[in-house]
Length: 518
Image 1 (tube, rainbow, N blue to C red):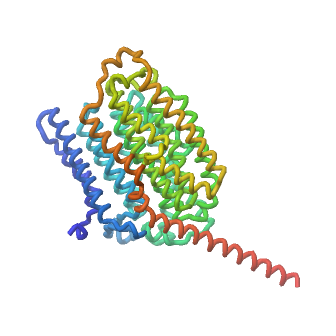
Image 2: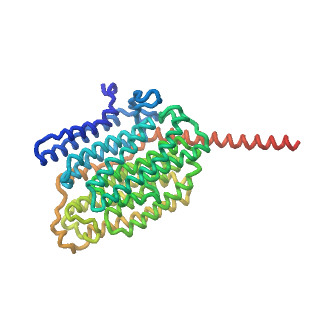
């Protein structure tokens, strides 16, 4: 019965239905309006998560094809349609988005008191756009979802953020929007080249190698900002510092993954020759991101800003793994995106927990809170260890596979990336020591209370997921295996054909010169 329903489309647009329910303004008093909005958002996001898990249950991991597709003609005269579907590359990120939104609602349960209904509507609308973006199989639909994500995120930062929220919101919006204009031009070219806006049709269309270079650069301008790569990362620390806790969770947990997903889905799959040509550049930028932002993180005095720079370093591993064009490297990149989504979300929530109590993110204002918040200290320690890639956590699996794949391509890049891991240990443990250990020198810290039931509910699933995927990562790896193998086969085939054509052209030139000489 489930297979006869457009289950994927229902999952995508259910949060939008919840947002409309909140806009109906249930309740007569402002307090009841806020509470109703919280409950509607929570139940809507939980049901959406349940539907996403159902999609996972009905997914055939042995197939590399797009599955669970919903399709109908949207603009038949232009050969554009509503077309969504999932494969082993998009489904893990689809599930990650559905998993984090209910936690964002719980995180904001008491910390957000101003314009609560509007806040919950923004997150539900954001969820629909994220789910739609990861499942879109039409270029126009993808671009609409991809850019629409900016609107609710802009409002979340700009309305519910910190004192410098307007500057951070506009910087975030302008950086990401300007980067996407070139990708729109590339999409228009692909539309005329393919004859439709179908992504599956474009994936099997061989583009001229010279044209690939320009198309690759156009998409790179968009995805490099989103991920973000050095030196286009400067919007991220400001956005994280000013965003509310849940905004930072979804920003680091999901929005940064949009760039990584785009690199795999479009750059590597559609433009293999250009990807191969620009791989040294991507490796260089990735290594700089890993080392430079790790050093910058060491110098930070703000907890949120430190974790934000750490996110840039971790996403450097992702781009390194993707452009190895190796099965282990790409699977490691997908695993790293999932792991970073869980761990970075947890770390930002850890900062939010103490910020809600002390209203300070300055590292110097803390110290010795293990004496009064032991449960918090345990969770914080676990996620810090996961962020540095401790074996047994999900962070180790992703980084190990990435380095394994990179080692087969470029030994020096692997060595330099490994030094970034050492720096990661330094700034992470430095942060934990300064915040958790030592003496209670700040008298205000004595008034802090340990985790409440809601915060335990938030940390529990995150810790369990990090541990489960660290000990048994096969659910993610098996899910992505067939789709990754298909991408690599197409990539290698395109390079082999291009190489043969180059050899044939050289031979033809030699024959022509010999004949001319005779």
